[in-house]
Image (cartoon, rainbow, N blue to C red; front, side, top):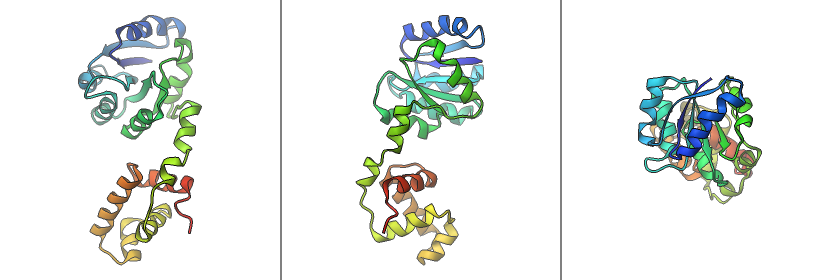
Length: 207
């Protein structure tokens, strides 16, 4: 397993370079690293690793933008975000930007191999605390939707496409797209799937 590490803490990077091969019996190694978030995508494109580990708390443009840039330039490379903070918000942003998993930087090197292998197999890896934060409805429950927005959200949750929604709401497809974009911004989600999931958890579909 070849990894590129994007992190501006040299000691942490050096620790991974030294300890990962030892603790994984040579199954994982760091092939390249950078402390510059702006250079992350180019470095990953150059090395084509199996995984990119990205620290979220880096100087501008920051780790979240680095995750998005890597996903755009090398979509086949799996990205795992890391952070030393307990705040779930950056981790959630990283997942929306395209990261397949998140690991705390407090993880011991010998604990990294199983989750990294799981990510390579297509699994999403999250600590239990972050998963609970994602499912907690407090943020969405405070969102106040009017009747038209609720009708739109119910249609989205029902899996209807733009044409079907336009017919149901008696508006044009262009209007549906505009309304949907506004609704996603209001719910602070990036796509229809997240909107439907958030609505279900928060009870936004209740009459």
